[in-house]
Image 1: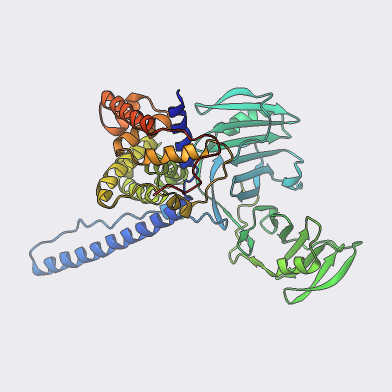
Image 2: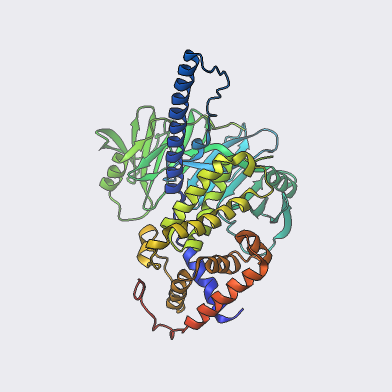
Length: 313
Length: 175
């Protein structure tokens, strides 16, 4: 390839970096489809009226009208603002007893985790048997130790190390299955990977937001016991359902969200809101209590919390 | 099994937008083209979804839409303007000394006749063989080679590399 051809490739690659976000296209598509459906409805209504008139006039009789077929595609055409993010993929096979415990979504991709139904471990801790499916991001590891593999006819690579097995392959996006805490790690990981299919139903629904940033991780041990987090430095915000144990900890009263909250260990602000708890903790120096209070004040809980997916297969 | 249209859109909208952006050199036009194509594809999904490679079929629809779109817009067509790109997405930082050369090359590619540009994109961005390009453009392989040869001749003719670090600044010299 000569210099001109190389330059062409680089120039085209540069244009590709300017690819617009799909959100506006999906929204426009949804609007046009609704308008199309509305038009179809109007046409159908007008047609029915005309047919009725003709029948009434005794000129024609018809019972062959078929109403327009419904379409549920709009359900997946969601905005990509972090409030609702399509998870897109799901494994159709999991080891016995595994249920979903964790969902996360950010600009880079999505993650789902399944653990044993009786697991008490926090999915974020990495303890206990678990199956993780990530889309949109590569496995963050070096090039060593990978072996070639195949997932549904696609070239893949697999690696087993430190009590876990990772399978990575490129479908429409990069998909990574990670399995740990089980026997037959490699075989299990490959079997899970082979079962991964598109999932148009599962949606990551952020339980809260702070200004325009939505919670990016959501996990729980039951629909009534869950925790959601937003972790953009310098302040981590957590909303959770289980009352915290403050015994033995240094606390001080603080006014937040127009009511009394707690300053915990001098670096975390905590307040109860309805049946939930909101906490903000600084992850870097220089943030004052007022900063944390202001952050908690900005928290907006989503009106329709969806926790029904927690501990479901 | 025939994939649902929803699944197809969820998976393919970004690759289609990327392809359309490279093809049109205009993110706004790319959005319009992809939107039009997906609307039409949805109406014919029973048939499109059952072909072996629905994404290839829809990609060809994007190509055809771009070509026809360009025909409709020809009267008011304007050369590529970097501000158009930047109004949609901010420019990505680039520290290589080829930056200005690439921008200049991009401008030249944007001025190619539409079929030559499509052939160039399919060859150098999609890495397609002549036969695949011919199928995509609906022409003979010889015609593909002719398109690419003429495009390369134009781009080489206009290709006068700037010394490193001396080139145009972003946006300068672009209409």
